[in-house]
Amino acid sequence: MTALGDLDRDRIRELHDTELAWFRAERPRTLELLARAAAHMPNGTPMTWMASDNDLPVYVDHGTGASFTDVDGHSYVDFNASDIAMFCGHAHPAIVRAVQERVTRSTQFLLPTEESVRVAEELARRYPRQTHWQFTLSASQANTETIRLARAATGRDVVLLFEGHYHGHFEEGLVDLDDGRAAPVQRGLSKGVTGRVRISQFNDAEGLRAALGSDDVALVLTEPALTNNIHFLPPEPGWHDELRRVTRERGTVLAFDETHTHIVGEGGATGLWGLDPDVVTIGKAVAGGIPMGAYGVSVALAGELDHTKDVATGGTLFGNPLSAAAAVAALTEVLVPAAYEHTTALGGMLADGIDAALRDAGLPWTSYRFGPRAGQWYGPHPRTGADAHAMTDPELTRLLRIWMANRGIWEALPGAGPTVPVPAGEADVDRYLTAYTQLLVALTS
Image (cartoon, rainbow, N blue to C red):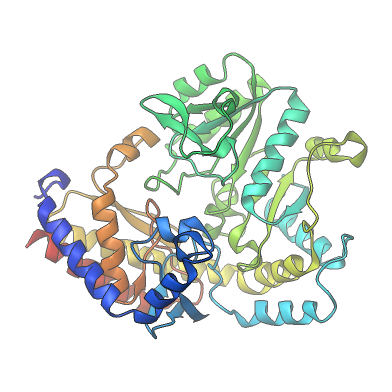
């Protein structure tokens, strides 16, 4: 058996450098556009993430179904799905039709349209404990408004998150543990932000009770299973029961961020596991990749959002009819039970293939599965975010991403796992597994 620490680090770097050189040589048009764009966009991209998440970001021409094609003519099966935003697939006919029809009747009024009622009704059907819904342009903004709502409802300031979380690029969401202490994970945050955030460990009931012991926590915000930044981290048996029990005892609002986890079924992981949060937030694929976020609340919390109570929520483009029209199509025509059954089956096929490739390579890594999502831990099953963080390997992850791209697979973001989008088929999963198996052979032979 070959442990992660026993892998030849020089071999990893050599493979990476060879793959990156090949990748660059095949993409002259992308290199030309990056150079041209650098005059007016830092890093040659409209957003820093596009550069920081990739050795070389490709400029894209178009996408259809489960794949997209770059400006140099290379096509990729999209197992990143724009970090779940394109789980419905690229240019899905139902979403294209809905957007085109809505555009002809205008896209913004700063007043409600019937599409929003239909979205709220559908989300309330999927999450029956969340009877009332409000809309934003992203899940980040939905989480920001949830924090403000919880502070208004409780009179408290502190937000409790779990190590390895990701809930968006707002101030509180960019605090995590560094050498055991809460610290900003990037520059540019206010100096006082760490005083408003407490970090605990997912699956650690004793640590949770200690973190909530001073009765100053307005909100616990978490995914039902942690899915980002670190490897996938599922809940242990009894964890969610304890989380709900303790937050109720302490008068703390409990919110589940379903932005990534809603891909497992109509009611997301909340419905799959029968959970009982006070708030559900969602975004990304909820409108098929058109900008939209939403948060649903219980009847009791809905009263706090009466306009006369003046909670700091809202935005000029929030609740716009274009996003709502796309969401109606995504939720009622694309993300239907048959789609979840299809993608979960393919996700199981992907996980089985990863598991088999690991065994054949003699690697003591562990595969995981979560509906249409699969992947591997670089070691045994982690219990907490600290465990998962300890087994991250940036060099190996960079190699995996560039290796897969050279073989027509756009891999998930670092720290995430590949997700099978709705339009994908068995041939796409086979293509992923072929490339993945070839990498493991190259690493271990």
